[in-house]
Length: 264
Ligand code: MLT
Image (cartoon, rainbow, N blue to C red; front, top):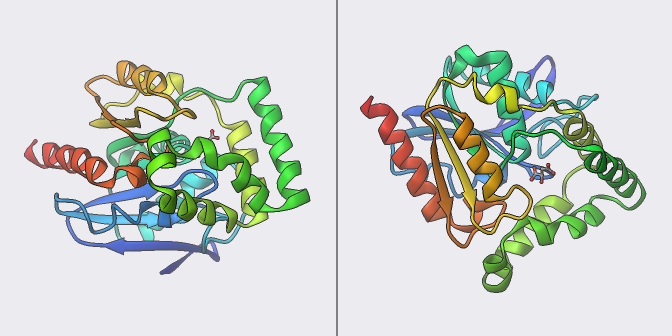
């Protein structure tokens, strides 16, 4: 479906009823990343996924920033008549989730931080973002997909689930060049969210695949230790896209978390 925010198209899906859960995808994905979660949780939930600006069916809007992603997410919730939601972000979607918390915390019922980290890019990381911008402008998104695919999934998925690797590679290779360029600006300029962690006072679930090499378990543990009362779940035999690699295990921990909220 398409909603309009300040005249810009935002692609989204909205499935089920119950507590609203808004899913934010990583880089360079689109909302189909959350296909295994939409309408598939044991807990009653209204599952909403959206394309971040410049990806999927969402129009680009430069300059890229995590604040822009967060503001679009808040505007989409308003369009859909949702006051407060559980915000769940994977990797870059997690960086946007921190921005959402800083800018729209009154709209957050709970947080789910998946395969992400709080820290900002260091100098080497920022240089790599610039090099990837040159790569996509020169050779297109397929070259980015080729470069990133190995780290995107865990060893187990690479060995046992080539269909999923192909599906993810296809998703990334379809990402529009402009969306990738803008997102790389957003990634490079995102602030360090470490100081934000201590301000989080809503229930928070941190999820990570034990084979995630991009945002490894130690990053998840650091967030968990800094967010009071948070819960950490490590998904076995999953890499960076743990929600796609082990959907049943991921949906189980997410549903348990949702049940724990409604029990409160
Ligand atoms: C992602 O999956 O969103 C990216 O790996 C995030 C990053 O490169 O920092």
